[in-house]
Every structure is written in structure tokens, then in C-alpha cells.
Length: 517
Ligand code: XMP
Image (cartoon, rainbow, N blue to C red; front, side, top):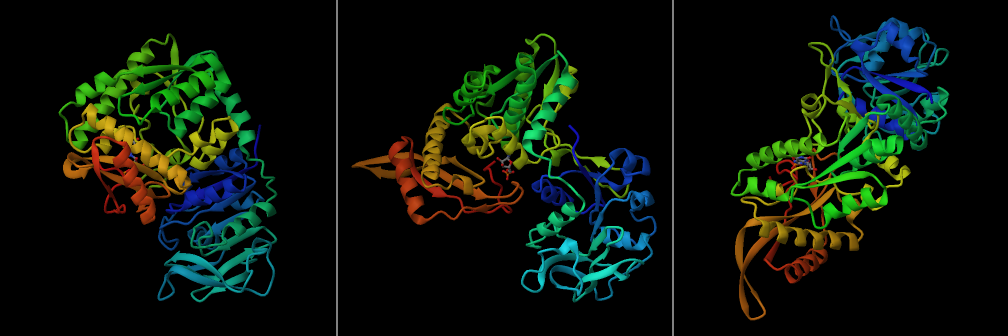
């Protein structure tokens, strides 16, 4: 099934991905491509229904600064230029751009409406001036022939311009960022004027992806490392729907999972969804190798290497496997623009199986490559995965090993699992789970004195961690009430033998990290 497609030409802005996010929220299919790759031939083949020029760090005044091909202006489709994209559009169409000289603007600004109405701005200037986010050194000093002004800011007399006869629109600010609070409205108007039908739905995507998986795989076998996380789970469910028993999943239990986690994940996929899942019970192997190890990096290395060995051992038992499924997402595959050389592809090594495809001679199946995280969740719901499973907090590959600073022992892991289960139960009971990015307990390598009943105790201290975050890159601690913290500490100490002291970690990231190791 073919979708209407919008092309975002990337000139290297930090926030280009947010443009794609805003468009996907409007059920519009779009792709981001670095300007170097966008040639006249590329445009003809891509056949966009509309084009957006992103912002970027370069100056159009400089020799050799990034440009789209001239042919883009002859496509006869609407174009929206943002920040650098606005300037490059003006310059190529006959306007003029000058350096700052006191007119640079960074941060919050307010745009005032011009006299005439413009479809792009329908319903935008609701109560006077609109707050926008500016980030420019250069500015347009003369607009190109055919353009008119529809909005100004104190330092940007051409904040919003348009040539309505050709459907070219240019804005100096960034409508895609959070600090342009009503910026989504501009994208909504733009795609409406461009005639997008909003046909990018998860239902449609599911059909298309299933057909693509069948075409790629044929009657070959596929293996998948199932972690129990959202990405690998949704990938597995989708591939299973496409090719049924040709897919085998391997769930590696390294003994560092949370309470009941192994049985829950395997139970759901094997019994509830009828997937073929190998439950690799390798707790002894992992915990044996980790015995006596306390250095965080060494722990990670041991776990990463063993994971690959174990996965390969089980995968080798599956005759004729030719493909490896991975839950790679769109943010991992977007090509980043490099101004010094050609486009560079940044792909994260994923799911602890980095390097495996080459080693085992397997080809990759990555059916989520076009999706953002929240789209993956929507697809998971569409595929019938339970809501509480899809909304689960992220869990790191090395598992509880990095929540157990110092030496890992089975006894400490057992205590940690129990305390974590009580903590998460408390968070769910208070209806806070979905407000929190990640919550967990870390067991500390220190024992403290306490008194319970009439007796002295000498048990472990633990730390509760709960953070809010958008992407895990930065985070803040969650402001629980004192009542919640008190009640939770009491429950943990009463219900979990081995812990007699509970602390709450109020470090943000940076300077801390989310995990303790
Ligand atoms: P930090 O602790 O670096 O964590 O602030 C940021 C996010 O990444 C997760 N994390 C990991 N995930 N393997 C993973 O798959 C790892 O080695 C790993 N270390 C941290 C962490 O849970 C948080 O969501």
C-alpha cells in the first residue's frame, strides 16, 4: 500500500527529528534525508507530496553552504522552509540574507500577525502575539520576488513569509520545538493545504509491514533475541503475524531479571501468543562468571560477551536460520549530516547482539526501522500486546547487575528482587507508574544497624530511584510525597528480610546517571 509521502531535507539542525515527530502525529508519512543525498533524480523517485527544509548550523552566505537541488522548486509541490531552510529558500529564489549585526535571536520571541490572512496561520494567532523559538545568527534582509510578509518579530521583520501562488512558505523560527507552544498548528495547516489525507495509521502500517516481511524472508527461518522490552517484543509479535512458525525467539535468562520476569515474558509469548520461544536458562553460567566481580565495566563486558555466546549457541540449534530480527527504531537509523565529509550513518549497536549478524552470516529483518518509540507502542496495541506490557519502564540489558553496586551474590539479588517488587507495587497502587520514566531499587554494598522488635538488626541499605525523562539522556528525580516515601520504606522493611534501611536518591542526570553503575 502506497502512502502520501513528505520529504524533509535535513541541513543538520539538532531538532530535525522533531519535525518528523510532529508530522507523524498528524498521520503523515515522512522521511528525513540529508541534503547531500537529495539530487534531482532522488526527488523524481521519491515523488514527495510536499517538502520541508530543516534548520541547520551553516550560514547561507558562506561558500559551498548546503543547498537543495534547484529542481525542488519545479516539483510543483508545497515547500516549507524553517530557519536555515527559510534563508536558503530566499537566497535561491532571489532574496538576500545578511549576517547578524545585532539582529541575531536566540530563544523566546513573539511574532505579530501581518495584515493579510494566510492558510498556514489558520487558527494560530489566537490571542495576539504568538510565542516562538528563534535560533538564528543570519537574517533575511530582502525577500524573494513573489513573497509577502505575514508575521514579524522585533528582530525578524520577515519572521513569516509566503509566496501563495507557488505554495512556498518560510518561517524564521522553529515551529517543531516545545518552546513554540502552538507550532503543531502550522504543520497541521501545511499538510492540510498540501492535501495529505492522514493515511499513516498503525493499522495501515501493520498490513504493509507484514507484506514486506513476507517478501523479504520468503520461506526462510528467522531468529530473534527477545528481551522482554517493548521494541523486541513488538518486532517479534509483528514478524510472527507475518511468518508464524518460521520465527523462533530466544529469551536469555541471565539470572539478573526482576521478580517473575522470565516466566511472565516467556508465558506471554509462548502460551498467550503461540510464539516459538526458547527459554535459555543460563543463570548459573552468568552468575558464575560474575562471581567476585565488582568493577562496573567488567560486569558489563562479561554479560555482553556471554549474551552473544549464549544466543549463538541456541541459534545454532535452529536449522536453516538465515535472518536475525532486531527492534531497531527510526531515531537509530536517521542519517546525520556531516559537513566535513559525506553523510554519516549513526546506528547504535542494539539489544546486546551487535556484531552477531556478521559473525553468523545472518541478514537483518528490522520491521520497526521507520517508527518512533510511541508509534511502536501504538503498533504493539494494534497487535494485541497487553497495555501494561507496552507501557513498561525500560530495563537495561545487564539487568540487576548494575543495580547491585559491588559484588553480586545470589542472596543480594533475591533481596533486591523482593524490594523492587514492593516498590513497583506501591507506585502502581498510587497510580504513578505512567508518570515515571523508570523506577527501581538498588541494593547498596553496605550494611547498617537497626532495631526491629526488641532485637538488633544488621542488614543491607537500599536506595529507591525514580526519574522523569523524555529520552533517558537527561533526567530528574520524581517528587514523591513524604507520605508515599514513608509508606514504601515501611513496607519494604517489613516485607523484605535482609533490608533495614531505605533511602531515596534525589540526584538528577547530569550529574548522576539513571542507573547506579
Ligand atoms: P544511564 O544510567 O546511562 O541510563 O543514565 C540511561 C538509560 O539507559 C539504560 N541503560 C542501559 N540499557 N544496556 C541497556 O540496554 C546497558 O548497558 C544500559 N545502561 C543503562 C538505563 O536503564 C536508562 O534507561
